[in-house]
Image 1 (spheres, rainbow, N blue to C red):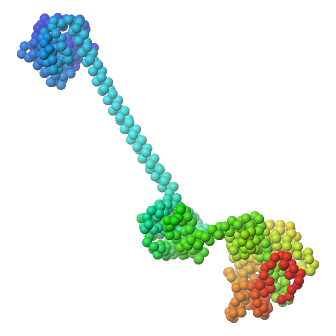
Image 2 (image 1 turned 135 degrees about the vertical axis):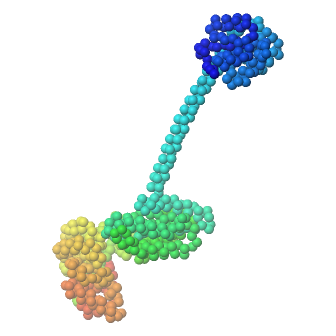
Image 3 (image 1 turned 180 degrees about the vertical axis):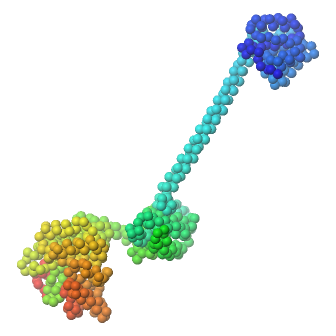
Length: 611
């Protein structure tokens, strides 16, 4: 069946009326108005007409044979194809009941016969306008639905794309966060992530009375030796192997982190007591003691471990790490390859050390040091052969600080070279003043102790030459005391410097002989003029023959190699007499004098004492 319109531009009107005159009159009038008009005398003709072409509007008479207008309208409204066609009833029935019934069965309007054509035309136009309006609304709705579907599809695509971008960005953020919070070499948490977890543990300890945790701070011993000798690639491989071995001792609730270089930290949570922590530290040390089979080398490594028990009284996690680090350095100082548990006293000691370091830096700037002189006696004629210059620190509040309390700090902080050059300058100035006295022998010598690190100074010889030039001191009056360790470290470069000093006629003394390497094989390599026997041997030489034999051997070694022998720490006449029997050349110690101020040393010289 064809339900299309005859002409979309000309509206199609179907008139259903059993009176031919009515059909003819209406048809003629409407046709003149430009409508396409079709006629049906009964229901059957009306149905065929609708099945052929759907009309835009139906004019329906009520009084029809067999099937009246009400029934025809109901039938049209009951069919899906015709239920939307507007029906205008045209009837001679003028009763309200008839009109109501007409509207009840689906009619849209009601025209009473006899009718005025203008009224019919207006009502037709109104209904057709409504149809057009509804059609436009339907089309607009259809277009709107299409546009909504299109926009919805585009929005869904945009949302999908946006979600993909969000997912990619989140993935990138997670990756960047992982990079920021983890060590790139070992894959372990780094310092930042460790501190975050330590913060949580500290917060939990403040909230939960029974919760305990501990921090282990681990520093590899001798790692620098491996790195410098075998290369950084091997060093990196070793760090990864160490990390894997340490992971054996970590539960899923604990944290192992690499801080930097060869430093690792472990956060142990839910511990029961300190024994549990020290047991883990012991197990770690045993595992690290075993060889590390790397790709090209087999390497041995150990570590020093500092332990701190978590304490809710700590304000910040950084303070916990500070104390764990302090305990680790104490373990190193005690011999390495061990652990040490932090004691609050250690923190006070560290604060004192820091205060001492700060004061020492100011002391160098303000030249708060003084030099005291201890006489060195010629054992044969018992008169003064020279002095050893010994530095003291005149602290503004502590008074005199002995060298044993501040020289190690000066070495660690890099201040020792400045102090050494200052001492050398001051000694040469004092020696220059002393040599102006005619009563003083021109052969008087003053010895100055040098730090091993001063030989690493590239301008060391230039500084010595400058001091000698400025003070005009005879170089033959100057002795430089050097420890065995200084000779062994960078021995080739040190040997060159010592020969340069000897060429300037400066005498060289090996200090504390017997306490270091004491290998006769290297003594031949260095141009030394004398050996100074450490006071620990002198103090014990009268106790037994073994100690006495050691002192005798040292004196004989010095003489056999053309060197003088100086015994330090002489406190009794018996010791002096024994040294004289052993043919020792020089001696110094409390028997003769303590270290005294320059003016007192000058008085002592001028008095020409004999012992």
